[in-house]
Length: 300
Image 1 (cartoon, helix red, strand yellow):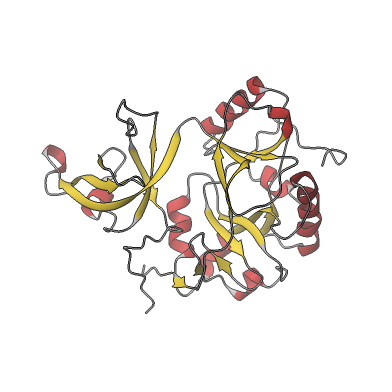
Image 2: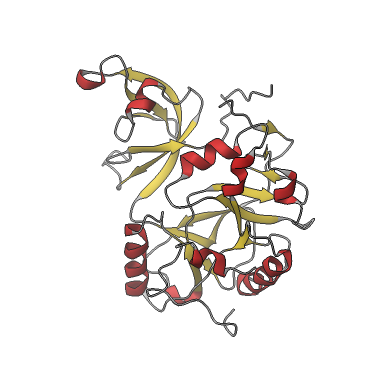
């Protein structure tokens, strides 16, 4: 199997973006383990950067999963209990990828991968690999090795990300708009000469029509009017210690059963106020791969 899996499942708009050529090449629970995996994290793309220096892919709206050779780990080092058949073909080397079932289906995926006892719902899940942390080459070399590895694994639920190249910012923005309209979360840009390194890296960039960030739930405000008797807004703590309220984006179900205190949420926003707070903040989801230090992990 090759990276073409993703294109076949509507991840890319084939008419809009060229693939790189060979020449260019429930009761939910997470089990705690000792340490967070050394994952590489993206920074925001800046429009002044040279687009042709990067290999580009769709940003998947899935659960980040680091394969350590024996098990899947979240970014915070908690084991994801996958079925034995799902992982039987994976090599005993580190892989960085995403568990994914399709665009705008994060909540459905979350329910599947957080179950202590994996079930038949895993037949809908795919592991999409996007990097090889232990391979010493630059990304243009790692991407070629990744294609070969996925072909060798040859299992329908294991895929490699399809990377493509664009020439300039205009093409990038056009592609971002088209994919976003089709339900994609955004784009990822890997510098061709970038090495894999843990932590935030300028060699890995994300580009979306909106910004997003994480915050920890610390409280709630009561709802009014149509939301009477429900949660009106989440009170969240930002990384700098300041607090703000997020009410937009919550469904009626989420207002009746809001995210627990101590849980980490992802919210989207558009720029900042004069005081530095996110503008037009809107709740997106609970981050299952983020376990706050205030959270209690159930292991029963």
